[in-house]
Image 1 (cartoon, rainbow, N blue to C red):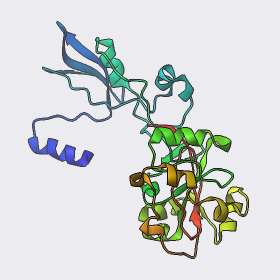
Image 2: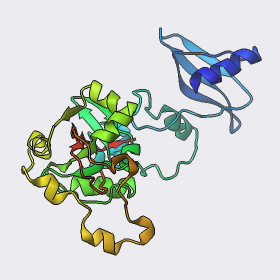
Image 3: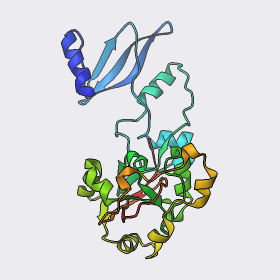
Image 4: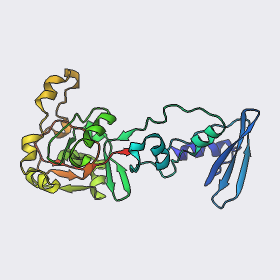
Length: 269
């Protein structure tokens, strides 16, 4: 998207693009925004005068202090945001009298792979295609296609506050995205259900016995919401895959083959 926007600017020929330059203050004149003061990477001050100022600086998902001031319970959460998402635009706007709304509505994503201080968002398309979430005991505990906040809260209620995201070999072999996760070391493999259970520290008989959709979900959910085994996981397959633990997640119907698992962790977006 950014290259296309830049190409559009270049074609116009009369717009100067300043990169590696951080706006620090909005200039005001009789109640109107008439420019900004910015600072270059080398510390030089740049003043841009204009007839109007449009703020398109995004949110503040990478600013832990700002998040904690609004939602103390989220203090210290890791994020998948770009490091530059610091909320400076919001702060500058507030400094000249702008109002804000719903600042505390910070979304948490259920499926994030965390490795040290790094966080990788695991696409929820996997759950949409039939991946399931199980807890440390190997039990499915929630509807994987529910809303992010509900899935995240359900994960936090599990042992250790995380879950394992599991896909089968058919899904894995058909998806470049999943192959990418595996190649990057986000996943482990198991040749049988028992190996998969052992790899995550769950009971050896956890998956054959516990992964099918609980009867209360089949009977208590409207027909339009009842999950069906996805076509990508409909046939018996030879190899299960494990993807590492993750912190918010959701549950879907089990297929007849071993699965891939990933432990995910909840993070502000």
